[in-house]
Length: 238
Image (cartoon, rainbow, N blue to C red; front, side):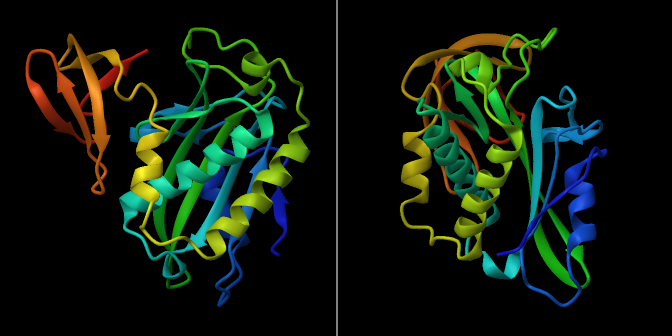
């Protein structure tokens, strides 16, 4: 098993993890820090956590070992981090499309997957930002942590090492597409519930129907009927 590398702080683990890849090796590399000061979220958003309170962990997974489309690998990744978090906290954990993790209506984890060519080999760079001990999120009312949502004080190193070991086993031989889409839809936050969405700066009620294998989300909107959306084309207000 490859060792999880640590930095006392860094700008972005997704940027730095490639420095821990061994030339010519097809092994997965992992990097963790408890102080990331220039992290990236989905769609170019900035992600920054309080120092010493949260986990930023990235894995560089050889694309040659992944027998899934990019969309299904995204779902597969979210499902596995959801499973780890649910087992750890013994709480219900939902996936807010496309890949945020929700406990009791608060986002506790964000995932960013990028593809990069390093040393003539393609990799999926899987970046995970897990809020663990932070309690004050300022002007981010939708954010929470494992502490705020469960009342439990977790050890950062123990959680990071356990998560890395769990994911290493899941990514070393990724599953086939069978069942991934079904499992993902079964875990979708607010699926088959009335929710408020914002599209083109207009709010309307809607109900999530399903996520498809191409990464689209199908929503039954009260004024427009069943529509499909790709990333950032619609926002759920929760």
